[in-house]
Length: 256
Ligand SMILES: [Cu+2]
Image (cartoon, rainbow, N blue to C red; front, side):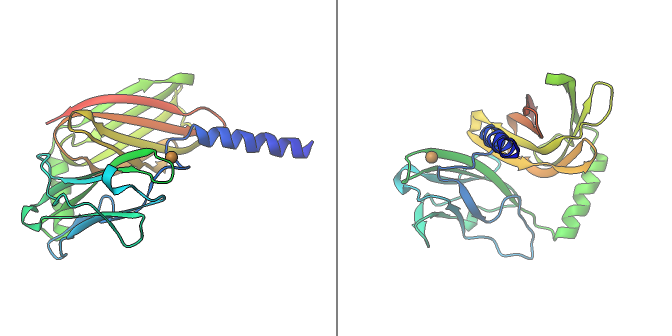
């Protein structure tokens, strides 16, 4: 009987992970990124001369790409994709003369030599001409001075209420918060993970996938420059619950 229970829960786990948000098995998935996602280079740091992504499977260089885009959607890389180090890493060099303070999106796509599947995604990093402390202070000031924010509530399956908030609702650094409660107001407790996914289909950016941090019962938060350019963005919220189906909610925003 005990064995049956173990088998049952093992099956449940397999089914559960099959529905999970991140593709875990197979394909050429990124293992390491350099520079790392969400890194902020300040004036004391030397600028990177290339972007390198190492994958879980060997990528086919002719059918793969890495593009480094500024906030005007212009490439700042030298379009010289090559296989580096191990045969699992792709790299492009950056034209340093094109680097100005701002947010940069890395768009990557990889065709796996091992199984022929294509994977794609995006991540951001940024340059600040101030040092980190000044940058943080000015960010706090601009957030405090900003009167704009974005809020939206959703009542989803199982009568779970999602309260989404984004401040200051502009291109660049934003703070995203999500409250997850039952309709009677009590916090939802059986949460494994909360993910945000950012896509800008018009500019072919994304998915930029992020895991939110738990800051309290049913309260999650994440800060970052995921809105890397102006335009129409789609944000997908995924709430992974223990023993119940994922909650998925999409919202469309226009950021100027
Ligand atoms: Cu695959």
